[in-house]
Length: 456
Image (cartoon, rainbow, N blue to C red):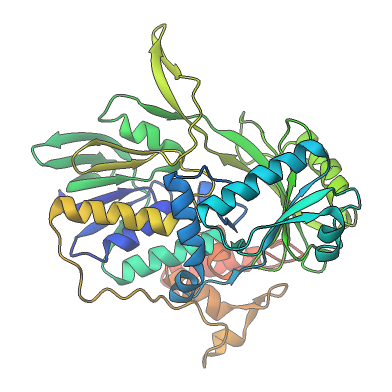
C-alpha cells in the first residue's frame, strides 16, 4: 500500500493545476490518471479561450475567479513558459435580439469588473474587424480576452508539479474508495493508495468517482461538439469572434489561436457513439453559419476537423426508481464537499480552462487548512519549455518538416513523459502542420519504439 497526504484523481488541466498548487504546501501528493498521459480527455478538445468575465452572473464565484484569472494570465504563462495571446474579442450581433443580449453582457462585464468592455455600432465593429459581415448590427469589444494552447498549459502545470515533488500514477484507474477513520483508502487496478484527502478532478467520470463513496448529487450529461482547423496562411480575424445568434441555436466562435491557426466551432449535438467521430451535417451547418458571420473565410484551407465531448452537470433527484436531472440550471462552478477532506470538481465547464489555476489554488488551500500543512519553502513556480535549439546533433535533425521540429525536441518530449505520437504532438507540436502528421508519424513511432526498448 502507498501512503500520501493528498490524492488528486484525474490528470486533465484541472487535476494538473490542483497538483501544482498542492506543491505550494508541505504535502506528499500523488496524481492518479486512468490514461497513458495527462491532458488526454476534455482538455485536449477545447477552444483555448481565456475569458474576460462578461458572460458570468454577477456575484458568482465563476465571475470573480474569471476576472481575477484573466488579469493574472500573463504571469502564469511566463512562469510556465506557455505562449499566450491577448488578442481581444468581439461578440457580434446581427439583429435586435442579439443587440439586446450584448447590452446585458456589457452590463454584466461592468458589474464584474472586466476592464474596458465597449459596445460598438455595426460600423465601428467593421472598422475594428474588417472580416465581419457587413450585416453586423452591433458588437461587444473586450480587449482582455485571450487564447492559450489548452494541453500545453495543462502539461506545463503537471511538469511543474513533478519538479516540485508530486508523484504520478498513469494508467491507473480508481475502482473503489473507503473511509477509514480520518483517511481514505483508494483501491486501484494497480494497488491500494491511502491518503488523508482527495481532490476529484476526473472530468467526465467525476460524478462516478464521487459516487464510489457518496450518494449522487450532481451528474454529468455530456454532449458532443465539432471543430474545424484552418492552415496558418488562411485569412483569419485578428480577434476572437463570438456570434450572438438571433435564434435559439448556438452561435459560432472563431479563434485565432496562440499557435497561429484559426479554430472554428464548436457545434453542439447529442453525444452518441464515439466522442471522437465528427458529424457531417453538424460540420456543414457550422460552415453555413460561419459564412454569415465571416464571409471571407476560405474553407479550402481547412486542414483538419475533429470532435470533442463537453460536460454538462445537473443536480439530480431520486424519481421513479432512478436519479434524474432536477430541471435547474447550474450557473456557477460545481464544487462538492461531501465529507471532510474530500473535494470534487464535477462537470466544470466554460470557463474552466481560464480558472484552472485559481480553482486548483483554492482547493489546495482548503486541503492545506484541513491537514494543517505548512507552506513549502522551496516551491519553484517556473517550468522551462522544451528548447528549439541546443548544442546537440539531434536538434539539427528535422523530423516534422511542416513545423520544423527536430529529433532532439521529440526525444526531450519523450523524456518528459510522452509515450504516444499524440503525447509528442501535445508537447512539441508535431503533426500540427499542413500534412497533419502524414510525413512524420511513422518516424515518431520508430523513435518511441527505440526509446521503449532502450536503444536510445
